[in-house]
Amino acid sequence: MSKPAKDNEGFVFTVVEEKGDEVIIEISEEDYEREKAEGIEEEFLLKPGRHKFIRGGFRKRHPDFKPSDLEPRNIRVNVSLPVALDVFNYFEQRAAELKADSYQTLMNDALREAMERAAKASPPPDYSALLKDKRFIKAVAERVQALSSPTRKRKRSTKAKAA
Image (tube, rainbow, N blue to C red; front, side, top):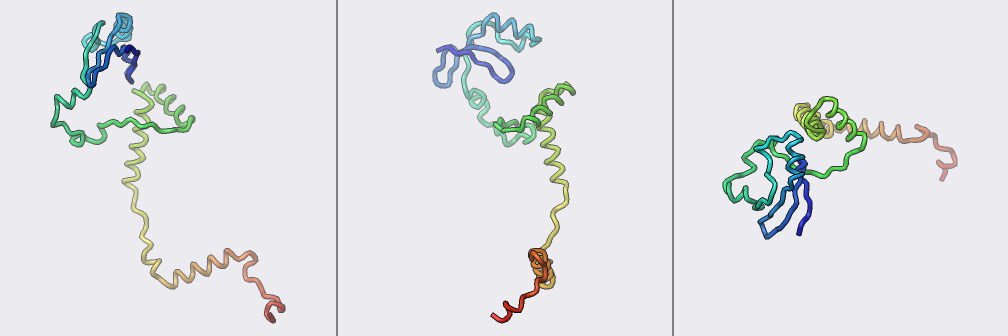
């Protein structure tokens, strides 16, 4: 079984074999040279050839690690989120203008700013006292009735009174 794969960072490799948690990948000479030409430091490149990886290896090596111990702002979660095209285009263009890491970073920053702004906002007013005030409720009811009447204070005809 051999299938080309590409992760989120652009790392290209071919999966040669999978056995349970074991995955053997192959790095071609072309892939190695392309990554090197893109400016990736040689110490971070996998040399051409086959390499064996173990899925879940991090957890096996660090059984006491708890993601909850990390600061939530440092944990990234992949989400599939439909976004309006104009919003996407705005953040993508803005990231290019600012030479930012990515449009995702700008979107994340905008969402965090909105979240922090909402947290600082004053709480909504407490209307519970008004809802207990019978004079207020009566005044609201009269106002609603006056506004909902199409002719406002309609006079009854004499025929309707007789009936």
